[in-house]
Length: 484
Image (cartoon, helix red, strand yellow):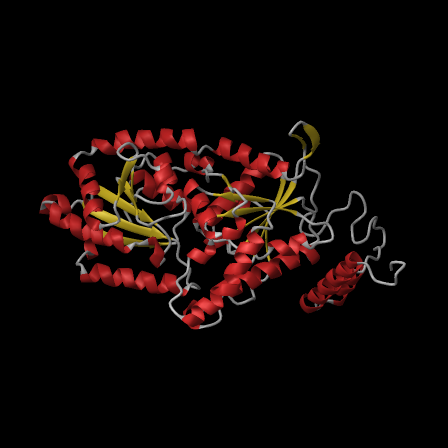
């Protein structure tokens, strides 16, 4: 207490943190022994044999893996232990954001950092195989993903889940870390900033969330208003902001007016090429009829914003351009992430199947849901080219993966593909309509050698601009600069 009789603000904040942490523990730790330990940690008492409050004695391990001291690295001319980095991600599934999180974690781990991933949902059977190479922890999956039928309230639920996850990590997980890397949901940032020892935050902005939803009614606009404000305000609290493309950087500046003084840096996603190089592709006999010679591939989640209907409409248009003999040799595989918990995935998959039936494309289209990494690599190895249909895609890792596998790409001429695909060199950039897409596809049928020449150019493009070495070094420098 100060001489004036008032309690210092810092003491009040510490008390509130301890009280909040205790109540979370009480709710989630019914075991009396665990609860008593929690009380001793949170109120600052020493455990038997412990050094500082709530910490094990020197040399002792922690539950779920106490962080060992990482090997010493050179950090901007300073010698010291490599940073300990904690990744916070809403839902560790099979999307592009999850691909980037895993690649970033593996990159920092290879650079000597101690790395852990915390998420609100993790199913090893519905995630990239590399997730099993990393320590992944899960908390808060019991919280709802939406507030009712149709996925309503998904945004507010995502905010609650991430804030809870941050509170859990800070108060309950007994983790040691120097830097937090979070993405997609910025609402968790204030939790770490209000900690007794505020953490350095690196926020990776895939795309402003407020632009990913429609506002069709007054109630929807009213619901989104505070969420949009929170997103902008909390994003600005990050110590470092990265984006995935120049396109996203421009959208960031246009969208977040109050952050006009912040210039996010561009860190292009890269590939964990080891898995691509080490996997032996399989034959696709169980997916594609043997007589099919020209195999076209679409890889995207089963979401309406991915514009998968364009791929099917393109196939209808292509049928009118080809002879019956050439048409019989064409096949399209629509592959993508699919989660039965996500209503849109279920609905859109049914919509696409109905569209195939109505267009009489039954023998020319195969749907593949939630494929494995080995299946994806096999598909890319065997297909003629990839159709990438989203409009204004933030970056798009699929074209980069395809080009590395020497597979040309036909993509919409907007968003991230403008920075990854070189028109008429590694593929074609087209207007988002079936006429232009079918014209580009026809070129590969008329001149099969295009696959080889464009494929070689694509692989060279990835090695030059999206190498894992450049990604690793850039990310490591961003992390270490936060600790200088």
